Image (cartoon, rainbow, N blue to C red; front, side):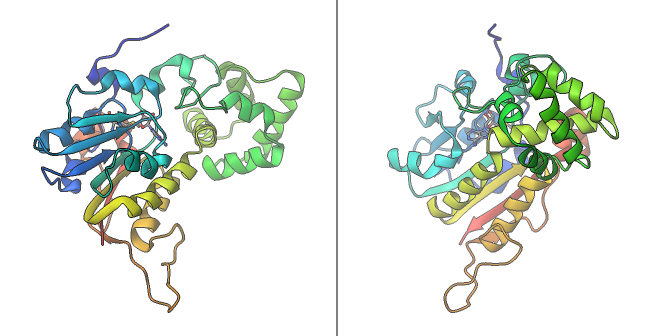
Length: 305
Ligand SMILES: C[S@@+](CC[C@H](N)C(=O)[O-])C[C@H]1O[C@@H](n2cnc3c(N)ncnc32)[C@H](O)[C@@H]1O
């Protein structure tokens, strides 16, 4: 079953103008859209580039290809952004002037039942952004031990009853392996505490982060951004939950993922970025009303020193 999309039905870009403004685009520069998706942000970047400018759009989902603009300044890289540096080197594109990342899944992925991202539909327990990825949501639920499941639910989903849910999953799968969203919903319904929508959103977020190693990939993207950006180049990142935002905030502030700055051999602080946004930018009331997905969005921008 193959759905067709138009650019606007694929995904509505979040914080579009704020993020493009944050990039402070040099018309003949080289830019990276690390999360191409429906191509909304890329389209705006291309508008601001002259004929010498270049844009590389990364997306690990082959479905995003259908949105690639026919523009010779644009190159689509179907790969994980954790391999940013390797692919840019391959294209002879280092150093770059700016990198944008708009994290998470697109509406297209979320609204396609067979991708398995949403508890609104039944479908396979998949949740892979890269359809050729080797670990599905079913694999996580059927193979991870109870301790790791608990850790995943409490760290990635901030569930208050992570242990109860983890043990219930192990008990259920001893009878029959998890295959569908319905299988997961049955065990969630029997063990949920608090409001249904919130609980399910937390469970699904936790599994999705694990399946796609989202935090691991983000760390690699941030580290490699510092290596490929030229001095004065900008990094703009839009996050949708606190785990992502904390990594971005600490990295932009301190050059590492901890709360403390990195010190060199002599005890000097090695700053990699100057903050352009001291506090994250959030969507306007108007945008939040028009696009509920923008409600949790936070944009941070920093400049490579
Ligand atoms: C929120 S959407 C981006 C939407 C886009 N900014 C737009 O305006 O249409 C995120 C996209 O990034 C992709 N993505 C997420 N994590 C990725 C990763 N680690 N590597 C490559 N692509 C990734 C997803 O497949 C998805 O298409």
